Amino acid sequence: MSIKKRKYKNYNDYLHHQSMKLTIGVRNKIEKFMPSHFPNAVISFEKRIGEFKEYVKPCKILCLGSRSGAEVVAFRNLGFNDTIGIDINPGKDNKYVIKGDFHNMDFKDKTFNTIYCNCIDHAWSLKELSKEIRRVLVSNGRLILEIDHTIKKKREDRVKQVKKKSKYESIMWEDVKDLEKGLKGFKVISRFDSACPTFMGIILDEE
Image 1: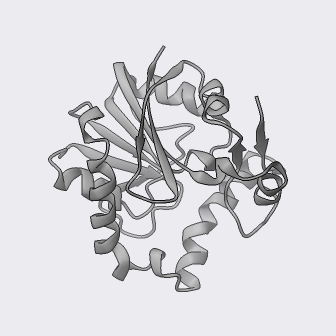
Image 2: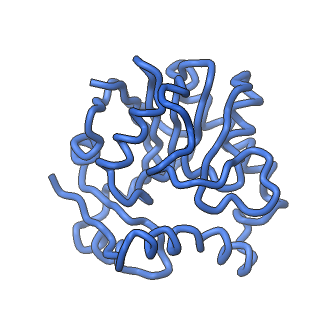
Image 3: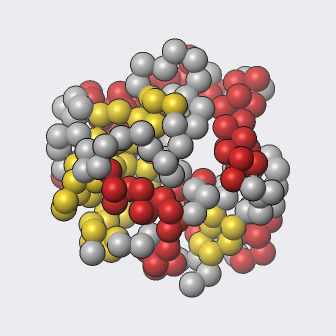
């Protein structure tokens, strides 16, 4: 298995680094972080969800690392009304996303039928994250991931990516099989083409 990890001083250092992405994005007025971009982000997510909607198990859905909550709104618009998000830094007065760490979620066991994530490369530990996902998923629940095509980068490029302070990826891998091995207790049952051109999608069930 070939996985490259960003080096942090400790877990608090990791949390601080990840929480700064939104803050810096808003401060620098990067378009995708601005409130004015939110409606466009919702439309984009509606298209993306449309590519894997058939795999979603209702009724309760959780979006991991959902920042402003555009994917939460998109799920709701597509009929999945009981959808909520979680993020280290959801910004102020977020109606769609709860502030929290997806490695240690404040939800009861077996709460959600489907969990969706497009930022698993920001995880501290795939093993710890998969353990927590399994805890809050119902029996026979489903995990849906959209993963960035950085998996196709050369080894030296992946190493550079997880060393740059201006980047926020904390884990990178060579192949989907590496990711699947890291996500203990899950197996890939299908793949799909994401409507976002830089991503690909995988559907996982518990082993």
